[in-house]
Image (cartoon, rainbow over all chains, first blue to last red):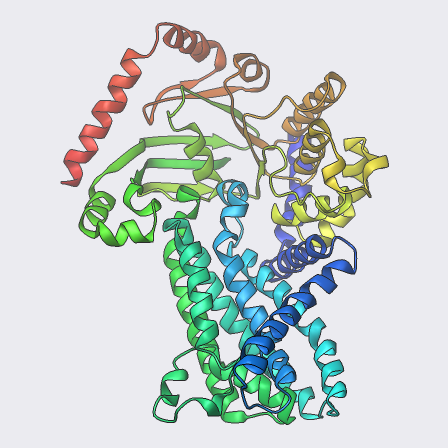
Length: 271
Length: 267
């Protein structure tokens, strides 16, 4: 008996060492790696595909709003790309979010682990794609006789953080709510489309009539996309816009966390 | 030493029927949705108390819907009771059903790491056990191939190999022990015996009387969300078989009256 007990004791301290933070970090790393590998399936085709999507949309909007409707924006294709690439991150995180918890139903029913890591890793994966697609934007800049600026060094990390917060907050809220209201995925794709047209991507921020411009700042994504456009095309970081983006991100995270905290104890009952 | 303690645990589910059909219907039927959420409750466990000591292997038995899986989920900490207290000590590891938590585009090796981390180990800990797990699974040759090329039996073997090598202090098994071919099944049985000798606490749900008889030193019999029998398999299993054969008029009666009882209390 005592022999057996000592054996069991040996395994306990090791189990204890599974310290919270280290394990949380490993969870996020392993799950994000999984997302990336699943998307790329170890080939470059995955990358090409994820870049092709916003490029195709840029082409379509150029035809509709540039060629046909004669939008007066300098270097319009470049302008579209500067907005569409970061938008793609938000859109794919939001569109993917309703299924995040549903797709992991068995894990949620059986294993106790912080469920929000599933959302974090999905958003990280989408974010990484955006960062990896920045060279494509650079290529287009050169094509139009422009060049990256030093302000990118500060601007890109700060905006990435703000956008990560926004995307995480929104995705966490949608993923949690969708377990209880199963038609939310349809509403989400509607919402994403509405959000797209209420964000200055196909048009520029200063084309919005000034009496309505305040309203645009209610859209959590608009100031962020405008910051990206300013950074990529104007080569400067618009600090006030960045400030609004960070505040929006904070609000989104707060809201998402609140909904998640309220609902997550019941996930295993409904998933 | 007590590892798992249930003190007067009651668990019920709201009927989510107006909610789960969607946001639109919840909005359209708001009053009914709120009323049904608050009042219509399905009782799964009522006033359940038991203690499980370190090293015990306990089988949960009972007909479908008697609360076995809910009990397991409460021990795992993924569900929470409305009434009562649950205390569990030590690291819990559930044995997952086939392929759960695996990514089919990833290789066998990558899946071991993914699954191990999901089940509570750090990457460093799981990598240290990698060789042992691969050797036990006898799938060395397939380790670098994507999981979708594996057969069902191979996936089950990999899952079992991971679970038993995570050094759990409490192992939860829900109805899944017939893993792989006969050779591997025998190996699994040996491994379970070894785990038992290491004083790991095991709680398992099974409809197979033979499995319960072979593995468990104690059974807890649930009917209609209540403990109706708790003791050594020799004592409980004969009664259980008899009750199952004598088909369950009494059991259904209990469920019904228990639900009535609770509804009365809520109003």
